[in-house]
Image 1 (tube, helix red, strand yellow):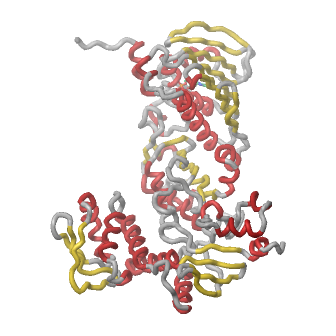
Image 2: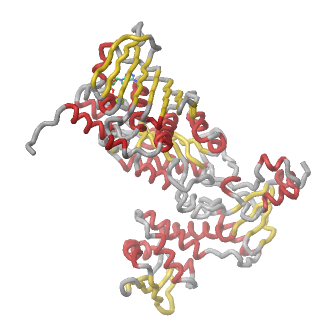
Length: 580
Ligand code: ADP
Ligand code: MG
């Protein structure tokens, strides 16, 4: 075929393919337009999974009558004018592509009025062509209705999922914007039924409650970093981080509940996820993820939003600075609120329980539900300063239970300390401290021990050899998948060398930075070096354990994030025994 320039209709369909992938992408563009128009109310209506009907009504500034047809022309925008504007984008839209793209693949009507017009402007289009234009009464703002999406584009329609899935995407989108714009009231109606409403009070906490429910929100912690804090010497681009993150006691199996906004634009960005998860280092069990909603504010010139068709990815000019700001802000928040989990029966049920039942609820097998039952004891409520190292209460040791838990009395009731996790924390801190100061003491084996590792982990071990040496290991490759271990860190002793080495191989087998590897290795060593459950301890050993735990930076959790102790308060005891 000879080369020809495509006609306008084909060209718009191709361009539309980039912007309008599914109903949720239409919703996203229309919501962004409403927000750019300064709306304080955005109502979204969906029928037939968004393909039969998708309507977004706002109370924003409206489009002047003369400009309405223009809004549907490609590259027609009121938001930027000259090339330099692209370096400093302050609006969500800027390409002038959304409305023409949507109109290319659906039937669209718009009804809009500006504050100084008396009548609204009505316009309808199908497959990009103008059908009707006229006047109709309407409130100030804009209502855009999109019908029969992709009806004429079967190739695209084929890729859509079930209506429920498409509605799921739209409602996820809406809740994200509700979190980014707490001052805007969002509503979502599906098949005529309201399924979501944000209060629009201006308080992020209220929006969060609408999205996640009051129980979860009460356990979330506010993040607020001052712009100055995050700026580096000589750097004139401060980064501000605000939002909410979960306390280490609340976590999820996926990253689905971590949302990020950059200058209030909802973005997908792996670096931001990583920075946030880094902040939980040593506080969350591996494989668990925090919940969070974070807005990163920086000068628009410090971020390029023009790198993705749907504008959902951004590129930072100084990634390192943003990473550090997020990591630091979140770390400060979670450290400030680390606390001892308290044993409590589930409140509503407890009211109706006999004492015996209540006790059973508390002591139920596995009933030490540190996660769900943990209560927060903020060190300083309503105050953004924090005590960087949560201290242990003064404890008097009473004895040991099941050769596994140390039982102690504190200023407010009873404490049970898990000897293994507590010792893990002690060793972990010791390893990292010594490694930084003088390197770890190593202990030679009488005979080098060959350890066979899974083949797919060999590369990771090779990469981790310098850190292993830093920690006091002496190992060398011996055959394709065998290593000879000649010396081990003195902290772990020469007992279970093969087992320890295999755990090490496992722990470094996912890609990680050098620093990350070191902390992971330290966690493995701590676990292997720590006193086991089932080991009887003398009074002196228990005292030494608590004294050492007290000296650690984060005495309340082990390096994997499990609690080192749980607390049954004096008032709780009174309640359990029916004294109150
Ligand atoms: P962009 O948002 O990139 O400018 P769009 O195609 O989404 O491009 O919209 C084109 C123009 O139409 C916008 O620049 C704006 O001036 C106007 N517009 C679109 N939607 C609205 C709305 N809801 N309220 C006011 N003006 C709107
Ligand atoms: Mg737009």
